Image 1 (tube, rainbow, N blue to C red):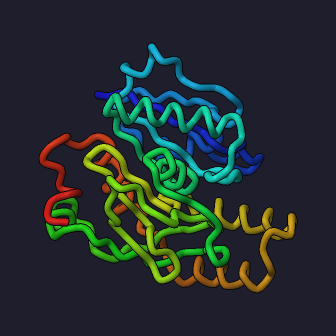
Image 2: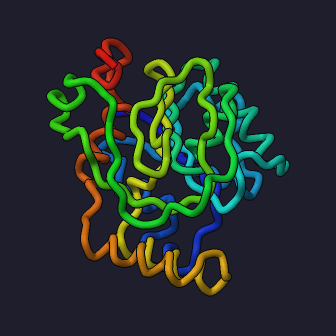
Amino acid sequence: MGRYGVLLCAQDSEFVKKKYGGYFGVFLSLLREEGETWDKFEVCNGEFPKDEELELYDGFVITGSASDAHGDDVWIIQLLNLLKKLVSLKKRLLGICFGHQILSRALGGKTGRAAGWDVGIIDVNLSASASLCDSLKIPTTLSLIEFHRDQVTELPPSAKVMAWSTKTGIEMFMSGDQIMGIQGHPEYTKDILLNLLDRALNENLIQDSLAEIARASLEANEPSREAWTKLCRSFLKGPRSPNPLLEQV
């Protein structure tokens, strides 16, 4: 039924560890289906899959992180090298937030600071075809939880923009039928975001006014979790060709 790896790029918070079994558990709740094998690699702590293991996997998910995707930490350079190997092996790669940015960098794109934080539930506009909407029953506007201050500033030559929002021009991109990056957090629940807001406020990373706007967006909207689940699973596990995500883009 498939074997997949989660490349964890963030340390688990006590809240997420206690309630969800860590970010690995959060991603499993979004992506895992019966009969599949899922493994985790804490790449931010230097734990990487061995080269001889890579062929065992159908795809990998690259998670969010508190680190900068444009940074040159030792583990980030190792991750870039791993991603380039996985691209050459034609493995499916799904990047979320930091993962979205580091995938872009690995393919030759650029990342950097945005004009400011983007936090809360926002509307994302899909530029995908009617085939995407019809096949997966996905509307062309979806709500998504965001928590980032970095973004993809320049797409890799091989990639296409698949979604955008008012604040972020590249909310989602794809390269062929193999690579997809999503700037927001389809895996997050509202309580995870609220906990992150509290921690960011305590560390003086964001201002009270921004936190209030984010909390108001949580009260006013619900993330389109079912639609994002369908989209992510379809990409990660779907047929190589034809791919409904790419038809008529």
